[in-house]
Length: 114
Length: 110
Image (cartoon, rainbow over all chains, first blue to last red; front, top):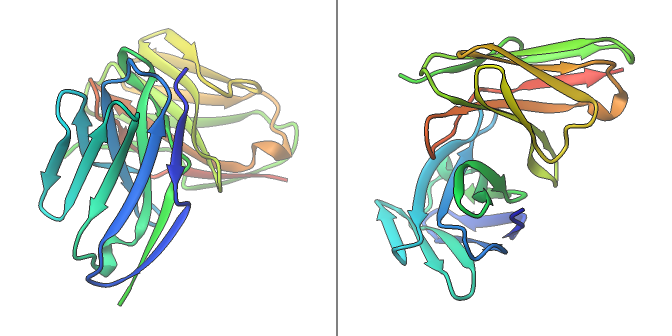
């Protein structure tokens, strides 16, 4: 099955700064890479995803980049705000082709200080 | 508005008790999942169901079983609860890629 490594485990930034979270995966057949945000007391929620046919995707202040050769992908949050404070999880397909099951990274606790 | 609900937010049980965690989704999704979330370990898949009465083991199925008698409901069963099953349990459902999560059940086994 897929192995997903996520770094850092904790990240503290000042409001307005950028935050970057990185993940690596092991299965070169993986083709779908989502990012989930978990706010305190809630379940994770999808915030952005990328497929292997593109290298970058943006949605307002968040972006995801993918390097298939190196088998890593990153979440970029610009102009961070206190409401961005949460745990972020990257994920990849559980085993190559099927995208229904996901393997999640261990999570990054992002704290945005006002 | 899509919704996944879990029967309890907090649950306290005794060692050896049989525990049922219930999950209901209102989106007519085929796929449903049970995860366990522990600090430093992320989300680990316990069981997955892709249709009524169909199930697959995930990474950590030992000590757990599941039941899916109706499409909208997926139950996680701890046959004989143990203290190492104290954790946050998250249910999710999906039609294709995006998984929709419930709010979680924090289970404490004493």
